Length: 126
Image 1 (tube, rainbow, N blue to C red):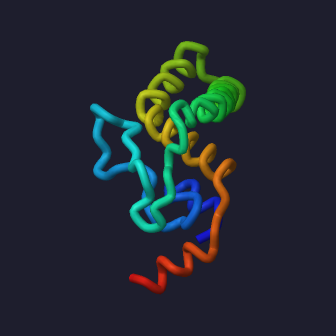
Image 2: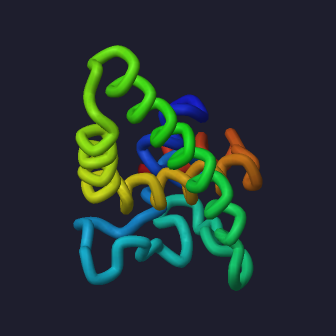
Image 3: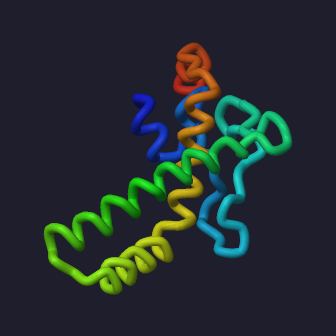
């Protein structure tokens, strides 16, 4: 599995096999993660406050989503500002937790390194 698909499937950055987040999705704990990878035992939260940097990724992601959504709806679709922002609010309601999770996944994949030896071991031991 390559890095991009591992990020969007929210897999462990070290082995790209185990899930970062607990399943099924739970609205009471939307960012509930495994403490360690189920496959390679990589610690997914190395220190308290580790994912603070993911907030910046989320902020950038959300900013571009706002600019793109409002820009396209006003310039190309000729919607009013009120209609554009109503759509934007709807998009935020639907995608908020996904953006927070994907931001954590991106941040972890930028910081933690892929180890093909661990990935190969996990494939052969299954």
